[in-house]
Image 1 (cartoon, rainbow, N blue to C red):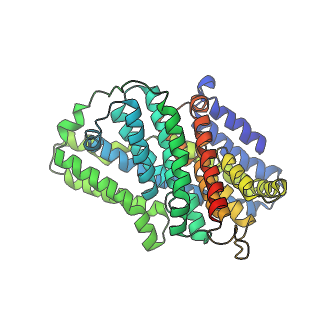
Image 2 (image 1 turned 45 degrees about the vertical axis):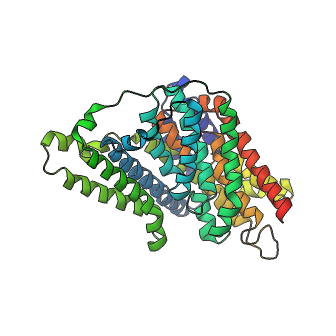
Length: 427
């Protein structure tokens, strides 16, 4: 199973030289890992089936969330709603724009979540930057900033939500204890990039099609409604205790009905262009399949006990040093999805009120939230935000590895050092 995962991972990394779409490789490793598990493993077939069903339920939630969020953003974009924001971002200097986009992403990610924020910001970048490789740089920084922003908020990342619901952290303490390290992990790469980026950005030519068939009032209405529905998702989850994807599907349903009513008196041609049915064809389906394959494969490794063995090995090798354990988990989360890693860690290391590091809001849990949230930025495939950016912007794995990974790693280690120093000074 591990061999199949590694070989498949290499195929994804070498997508461009091999000329094989990464979604195809991801689907293959997703199916093959489970096939090997059920045929070669010494497990009851019914038990393996139950594990697969559990994994499918978790994966489906992520996919429905992603698909609904992408559709809402695409509806706003198709109606030219983001033009209102891009018209107000007048900076053309590359460094100035980099800092504006990064801080906007950082704080949006804390309120929404890193995946939704990345989808929204990538749509904005398409309106702001024409050159693809320049846009890749900004999209990569969006991934770093989104993951950093999600790490200090109880609702900003799946792993912080898990730790919050599990009782390992409290909302107030994770904000005050992790916002500085998270800021550091974003600002360090920004400072380094500020010395290398030169010149002005070139904006793409504005599309007149949507502008001619939507009024400024309609553009503003759809922008406010779209962003409002995205912001409503964590509120919906808090009050109903239903999974976030239900709130996102509710938002899509409201958006769909609203646009149908808004355009009902317009000509058939305009209604067809702006209909959600037509917009759905523009949503990046390969990105959905890519997510499906990766999450299914990781689920197989988790069900087979590989991730639990990894946690046990970490504990034994490090002698229980919380800083080494958490930092290593963060680096591993750039290769393996951070959700099963954190889930395994929550089972391995119980809350212990008698040990300050493992008590509620202990350093171990805060550092785990930071490391699992930001470590995924080291590789483009290491986080939901990165996978979305890779799919939507067609970012090359090797390009990210050469140009961005070291920046993300330096920022990640700087933030981890910040937590260590905070612990030494205040505890």
